[in-house]
Length: 338
Image (cartoon, rainbow, N blue to C red):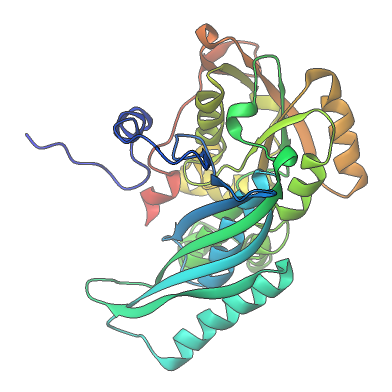
């Protein structure tokens, strides 16, 4: 029987084997495709060019804003500054109007302007078979050679700090796309509006806090959890670092509206798309200082775990002190309601 993949990311082991078939032969490629690696890195001489491509497939409202920020986040996790963006915009046959197209372009331009990014190209078309708009963004940035951070830089013994809580993007998407469903579940208007506002507050951008963390002595790596939520992001970090991991459930900041949305719909907040938060691997004796430094700049953050020898596995410590395997969500929890 032919194997079929479910909606969401392809399984980690499958992707690892698939990517392993194709060797990078260009010596200027500093970092190529890899599970848990956020970006590609190309040696341009005095600096590195950092490149990322990511689509927006769940959201329809404010899709342009999502596309810019999600791609810029990955550039920032490498310690780089996002500079240029290309956007491929695929539009459905039904319902595509000049107002829709111009609205999406306005979102792209506004989000780019806020982050100092130039929209330099891409492609736009009406595409057969689509039910909603899809944007595939490509972001380019640059970083000084000595300032590059990759997830493979994380190491056993590092402490894991989470900047901002979870699940920011998932809360915003569900509240915007499934408002009627949440109303049926008993959400009042004020709570629904707060959840919808998560796109901007606490916000899905991590560019500013990533810069703070990248400049902090002792930071080894950063990774932003996206599809599959915080749990999958932690799996990806540990995989890239060839390490084990323990995360302390009680230490994870979960926003109240996000928790309420997930509980109402039977979703796990740790497996719900989590752009807007940032995982940092930092030297253990510097972790508390980093948290204090981030707090001084106005960012919620918390020590949530540590990287361990690989034979200790990837686990979550419950409130009762018992450890269990940390679930990985190849299919984001949000797919269960879309």
